[in-house]
Image (cartoon, rainbow, N blue to C red; front, side, top):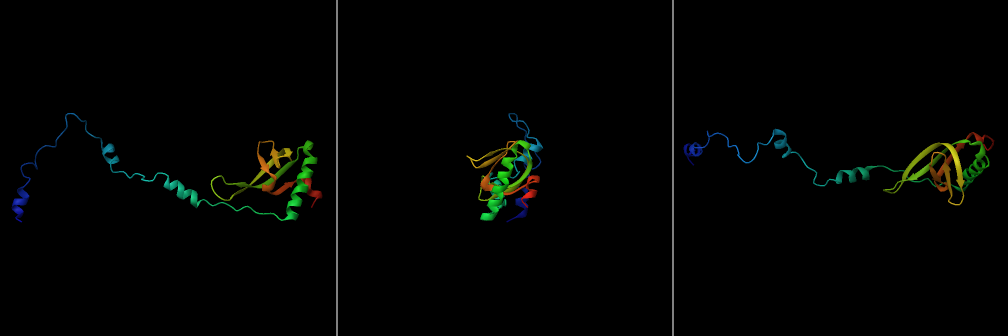
Length: 145
């Protein structure tokens, strides 16, 4: 191939002015750059990976003596509801998206012990199932220990 012919091939157009469209406006540099920006082919994939990587705790199963102690504490709270005792309850909160959950501790005043639904209702609106409770603490229990 002759390089002289090759280099002269575009000589007739190489120095012409850049074409400007009459019907279309000139694209801004930002719009031009946006054409080359990456896009998410699988937009929910990143969220799914994060959800899978999120760690949850397994629920602790209490033995019968631990369950009995919690029941005694709940009965004592029920007897002193009029005094509005301050209690701290640690409980298992099941995860809504995957197996497991997390342990939370709430401190406040008990509004009601709902024996029919097996749950404790706090004055702040929190409801905890009896079976999810792993610890109950209060100044009321000094005589139990």
